[in-house]
Figure 1: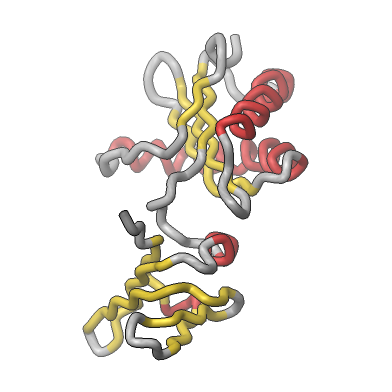
Figure 2: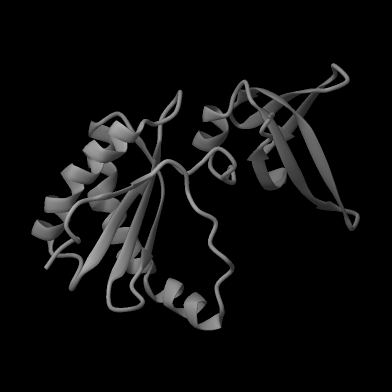
Amino acid sequence: MGASKGPLFFAAAAFLGGPGKRAERKRVASNTMTDRLRRVIEPVARELGLDLVDLEWRPAGPVAVLRVYVDRAGGVTLGECERLSRRLDPLLDVEGLIQGRYHLQVSSPGLDRPLRLPADFQRAVGDRVRLTLRAQAGRTRVCVGRLRAAGEALEMEMDDGRTEVVRLDEIEFGKREIDF
């Protein structure tokens, strides 16, 4: 059966509301499927010069949805999303991982996506970021500044000109600050 006719493309990821308990159980149950899909999709994305940032497998309903989020230094174009989609569509059918009908959606994860992995922070070097640091003595701390370097720790230039170094394991949540 495979994917629906014609690929779907998105320039940025849409925000999806928080899952209920039923959806959360399905997400846990589909982790194995997500791992298998990742093993098939990641090498194809890498071959096209793209980083697989995330993927979502939503098997609920009559037509399942596979969302693939890719990026690269400098951002990803609609054409690159299209090329990956066209490569994945027949491959996923041949691999036989997905039973039944599904929609394949390939997109950029969007500018305001959470920064989770070291590679996410490396792609954000030069950008303004907002970090929420883990609570110490019962208090969380927010750090906003320009990300100057990302490795085992992040080096940030704060608005007042001082430099702040933050270890990755201190970060509870991070995202880019978008200037309009």
